[in-house]
Length: 317
Image (cartoon, rainbow, N blue to C red; front, side):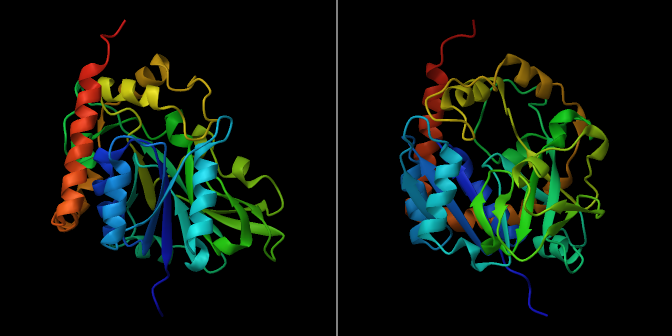
């Protein structure tokens, strides 16, 4: 039986230092294509993505987001217009600070998909949220090796879901947590949770609500999780605050990423090194990408620009 194909989408804004690792990690896991939308970037991300696209590692679109429009919704729509993102059997959306981490089988995407029985339409995975682990200042390097302290499994932050959806062409729109506006032949969709248990949801319902978050008691991580590096270090978090939100209208205030959000996630104290099982393969893939002089040049540029912006931040009030 041929291996099922899967595409990955992400939308970014000024996240250049993290792109090479993000792409390398998910290519190692087994995604066939990665498509990235970059909005209103001025940190070298566009040049970096252009170089990665020229080398065949990603597909990429650059776009500007008008005031009042939602950057991620705009980005996903533009990727769908530009590329045949629906050609794969499965489609997933992750942010650039989210890394899939498979516990099933040989820890590949293929092993996770093989764990889904025939007829499963959606695989809904919970977050595992990682904090700074006592680190106070950002430094260059792979995020997945730098931040190894997480919150307890049942923490409310881990109730967030990201999904792999089968037959993406059956959906009319892409939400940052799931596909939505189902227009396929089914009246009910079968969802496999992160421990392999199944449930059914109404296909005609608001899927973005059903597949966005679960209560603490329903958090599951047995088959897979996505590691969410939501805050990194205090200085990196302050820069994130100024970047705005991808899931909220452009130009509006960022009311979510406040001091309480950071404090809630900075209390992580449980060591979780499971994602390091990919470290050797990801390091080799990153070296392969960075062997391209244009990718190496613009990756270094993005890191330098990021460091300068951190240094220019006013002292915490």
